[in-house]
Amino acid sequence: QVHLVQSGAEVKKPGASVMVSCRASGYTFTTYGITWVRQAPGQGLEWVGWISTYNGNTNYAQKLQNRVTMTTDTSTTTAYMELSGLRSDDTAVYYCVRERDYGGDSFWFDSWGQGTLVTVSS
Amino acid sequence: SYELTQALSLSVGLGQTARISCGGNNIGSKSVHWYQQKPGQAPVLIIYRNSYRPSGIPDRFSASNSGNTATLTISRAQAGDEADYYCQAWDSIAHVVFGGGTKLTVL
View (cartoon, rainbow over the protein chains, first blue to last red):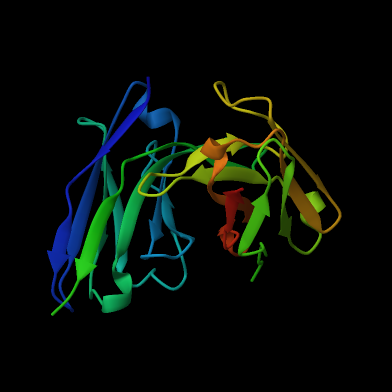
């Protein structure tokens, strides 16, 4: 059974950085990419970016690409998302999700981590 | 950038059929996926590639996609179906796009 287990909640001050981890199990880690999605309180889902667990290629949301870095450690089947220069509007639950794809233009998310609340407050 | 539009809320009677729409320019040419999110929980995939159900999802959930509208249909609505529903697609420029979500209330 696929499991994505994320690190615990974080409270950070504006301008700081945060790193969220996501440990995957139950499948071959390098077969599927990992996407990060965030959800601000009471709001909808927002795509943060994607990383290939096979070769480390990344693709970030344009609004975050100067502040977000995604990495993986295949030896521990763990994905990481680091967000720097935190602002109050970065306060959100951050989810790691396993990405599935078909035909090169269809991508969806079949397994979700439990979410990590990142609170940015002075 | 590509946008997906959903109604903020929808109410349906117990046992009735709910139809949740997701609008987008020529969305029928894209592959649309649907997620259900209950309060305090992570989203769950309920439909992928327009109309496929993952294992464990009841066949009361179905979907279609044509023209400028994709539709999620929930038949014989139950109290347990109360949740937020999100559509999602991929665009070559915007990459992953989510609709704003529709809150379903079962009366």
